[in-house]
Length: 283
Length: 275
Picture (cartoon, rainbow over the protein chains, first blue to last red):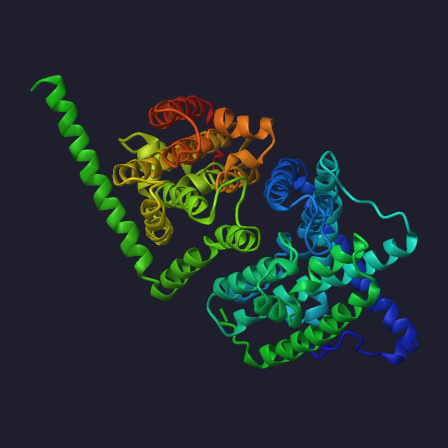
C-alpha cells in the first residue's frame, strides 16, 4: 500500500537524513526538468504567443501613458508605470498564465489516473509542484523574457545593483511558488466537485484584479486596496514589481514568505483530506 | 421552377436545418445544467474584467485620451455585444484546429452542405448571450447620460446597435481567416491569441491611445477597430465624417468574403490524418 506520504519519508536504512533529503530534492529537480523539457515541443507556437503577449503589454502601457499626468501619481511617473506594466507582462507567464496544475489534477481525478499518481513514492503535493515548476521556469525563459525584449523597445527597467537582483529573484521565486500553490488548491477541489472551472475563474480573477498585474494597488479604491493587501494576491505581481523597480525594499518579501508557508500548510491539509475522500471506479 | 425560386427554397431548407441543429446543440448542453449555468456565470463575470480595469483607471484619472467613462462604455458595449454575437454563432471556429488534428474534418466534408455551414451548426454557444446582455446593459447605462447631455441623439442609438452587428461580422471574418490557417499550419491556438484576443482587447479602448502603426494595423490589417472605434467616434462627435458609418459594413462584408475565399482555398489543401 502506498504509504510514502511525506516529502521526507525518512528511510534511515539506506543513509542518514541528509542523504534522504538530497534524494528527495533530486527527485524534485528531475520531475521539474521533465516538465521543462515537455514544453520544448511547442517552442515555435510559443513564439507567436510572445508577440501577442507583447501586444497585450503595449495595450496596457498605452492605456496608462494616456492617463498618467507628467508629474505622475503616487510613486509612479509615466516612465515608471510603463516599466511596471512591462515587468509584470514578463512575469505573468511565470506566476499565473502558464500554470496548468489545476487542469492536470482535475483530469487525473476524472480519468482515474489519480490512484496511480497517489501511489508514487513522493508526496503528491510536491510531485505536482515539481512538475509544474519546470513548466513555469520554461515559461519565464522562453515566453516571459522574449516579451521583455520586445517591450524594451518601449522601456524596460534593469536594476544595476546585484542586491536588488537578489531580492528580486527571491520575490519572484516566491511569487511563482504562491501561484503554483493557489492553482494546486483549485485543482485539489476536484476531489469534491465535479468541475473546477468556477473555482479557477474566481482565483484567476482575483489574481488579475488584486495581484497588481495591470495596475498598481494604489489605483484601487481604498477599501479594495486594504482587502488586496491582506490577501496573497499582491505577492504574485505587485510586490515583485515594486522590489525589481526599486520602489520598495526587501521587507515585502516577508509577506510573500508568510503566504508561501500558510498556503503550503493549507494545500498539504487539503491533500491529506482528499486522500481519504478519493473513490476510484474499478474496472 | 425558376432558378431564383429554387435558390430561395434551398436557402429556406438550409435555415430550417440550421435551426434544428442549433436546437439539438442547446438541448445537448442543457443535459448538464449545473455546468451550463456555471459557464454562463463565468462568462458574465470574466467578460467585465477589461471594463472594470478602465473603470478603476477613470475613477482615478477622469478621462482616457479625452474619452470619459460613458463614452468608453459605449465603445466597450459595442465591441462586447459584437463579440458575444460572433461567439454565439461561430464558436466552433475557435477550436477548429481540433478537427484537423483529429481528422474530424473528414466527417464534415461528406455532408451535403458547405463545410462552414455544417461546422457552425455544430455548436451554438448560448452561454455567450451574457456578453450580449452585458453589452446591452452597459449601453443603456452609458447612453442615457450622453443623450441627456446632447452628445448622442436617439437616431444615433440605432446606428450604435447596427455598429455592434458590423463588429460581430468583423470578428467572424478574422476568426474565419485564422481558422483557415489551420489547413496549412494545423495548430492555431497561439495564432488566435494574436489575431483575435490581443486585437479584440485593444479595440475595447479608444485607438487614439496607441502608436500610429498599431492604430493603422487595427484599422486596415486586422480591421476590428473599424467595427466599433470609427463609427462610435463619429457618433460621439469626436471626429470623422458620414463615411465613418458607411465604411464599417462595407469593410465587414469585404473581410468576410476574403476570409471565406481563404477558407475555400484552404479546403483544397486539406489532407486527412487517416485512421
